[in-house]
Length: 118
Length: 115
Picture 1: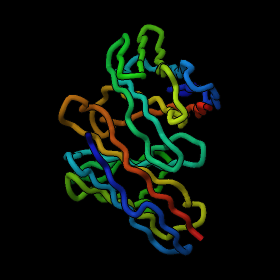
Picture 2: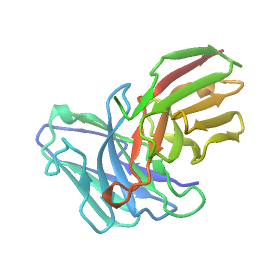
Picture 3: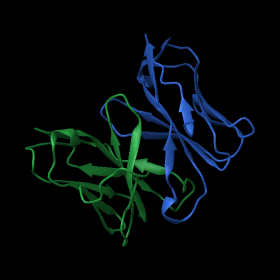
Picture 4: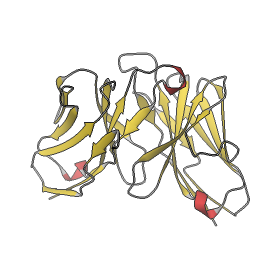
């Protein structure tokens, strides 16, 4: 089945530093990847849609200069939280859309990255 | 009105029970319907995917879609403690452009199956 990985799984950093999270589709090519944020016991909140080779599309209220997204290849997208602050602490999850095969209109999720900003 | 409504629960059932999870949606343009299962501190895992009205069965899981009522359900038969998780419905339209592939999620229902 389709596998999406994320790295790191957990990161603790000091306020003011930047953190990069990687999302990889391991056994399929993903022209589109999505970045979500999830608070405890809440549903997923879409932050941005990442298209390979073009600029990401951000949802309303999400600061594009704060959350930098790069989708440089068909299997890798990165999210960089710049100048992180404690309120950025959250569970960040990526997903990748498999545009081929029999289940081609859905998304497969990574295991998530837990960010704690001190 | 939210685009997708899902009862957050929590829902607690004994092992072996039949579980019914439901979502309603408001936009008739939605055409693809999915159910995800999320264990604590993990990413969501795709359980069921369908794009037409009717039932789709996969083992102990049955997904049901009623487009006329804008209502989708997930049934779990012979529930097990390992089914304890948060279940999220997700719906997608057929819009193109930069919104292509974007999912709209329900709030998630927390399910506990106790032995």
